[in-house]
Image (tube, rainbow, N blue to C red; front, side):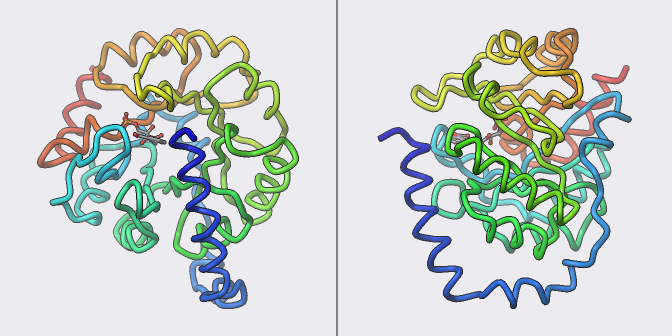
Length: 261
Ligand SMILES: O=C(O)c1ccccc1NCC(=O)[C@H](O)[C@H](O)COP(=O)(O)O
C-alpha cells in the first residue's frame, strides 16, 4: 500500500466518525458559511510572484519540519510578504495540522486560504467552508472522474475555488472538467518521495489554457520559479522551504522581493 492509499484509508474512518460527532446541520450553522470568499485563481492571475505559501509542521517525507510556530503569526507574516494565498494543512495524523489551524488563520488574515486535505467526501467541503477556507484541494490520484465532478461541483455551489492536483498524464485526462479553477502538478513522487520539477515541465503542455497552472512541491529557489514560468505556470506552492525557517513570513518577504526585482 503506498502512502496516499494509507492516508486515504485513515481519512475514511476519520470522516465517518466526524459525521457522527458533528452533523452537517451543525456545520451549516457556522457564521463563516455566509462569508464572501476570495478567489485564489484570481489572485494568481493578478500576481507577479504567484506564491502560495504553506503552513506545514511535518510530513511523511520529511518527518518534523517545524513544530514551534504559531499559525496566526505564520499567516500574518505570509500576508505581509504579499503571497497570493496560504495553504493550511488540516490533516492531523500525517501532517500535524487541524481545522483549528484553518480557523485561526482565517481569524488573522483576509487572503485566500486553501484547505490542504485529502478530500474524499462532500462533508469535508462543508467543513472547509465552515472553518473559513476559500479553496479546496482535490487529488486526482485518489478520486474517480465521477467523484471529482460531484466534489468540485459541490465546492463551486459554496463559492469555493477548486485546485485539482495531478501527478501524471493519465490523471490529467481523467480530470479535465469546467468545475475546476486550477490544475496543480505535484512534483513529489509519492512512492519514492523524490521531487523533480521535470514533472511540472513535462505535463504543462497537457493542461488546457483555461486553467491556472500551479506547480507544487520541491520548490526551493528563485531559479526554480524562473525555470517554470515559461511553461505557463502562474502559481507556485511552497511549504517546507518557508516552514523550515524560524520566521517563514520574513523569509517569504525576502523571497518575493528577490523574485520581483
Ligand atoms: O509532503 C509530503 O511528504 C507529502 C506526502 C504525501 C502526500 C502529500 C505530501 N505533501 C503535500 C503537498 O502537496 C506539499 O505539502 C506541498 O506541495 C508543499 O510541498 P513542499 O514545498 O515540498 O513542502
